[in-house]
Image 1 (spheres, rainbow, N blue to C red):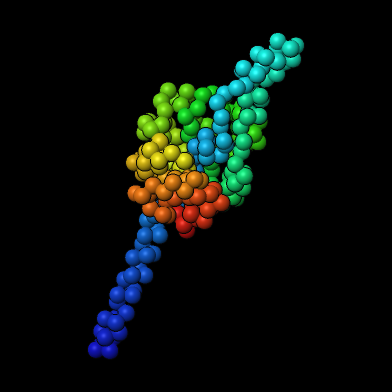
Image 2: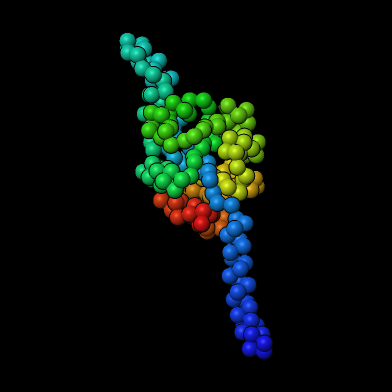
Length: 205
């Protein structure tokens, strides 16, 4: 009996530490969804020129789609498709939360990105724009899971990072230019979308 007591007292702290880590893994809900900003996150978006070019084309007797012309002036970042594919391969569902008008669906289609997403929420459709938490509330309703099972990726410190975090969502700030917001923990910052899958996996295990 005395020997058993000594062994327990020596192994107790290690056992409790292991038990605590196991408990946290059980209690922490794994990620199921990733929400995405679009402008300057997935696409380089310049000012809208589609309608202007189409009007000029019509004057010359040509018929062009404003959306297709507009999309031609939007560049997909090199790491965008790979990141979306990686997230999908992890079993995560993807949605968009963007301060954009209802042209977004057509633009993402022309850019070859639309098929990755289960839903799109634009500020025009939602009737409210980021940084209002209301647009994220609408997104969470579409996800159908609690906020702690959702991540959000965006390049704007207030609109994307702070607002999503305030909702209990796992917000990540994409800092392509490495401006370095001092109050954003390193584990919440991305200099490239290539870093995203490994960060998300930490919340899935």
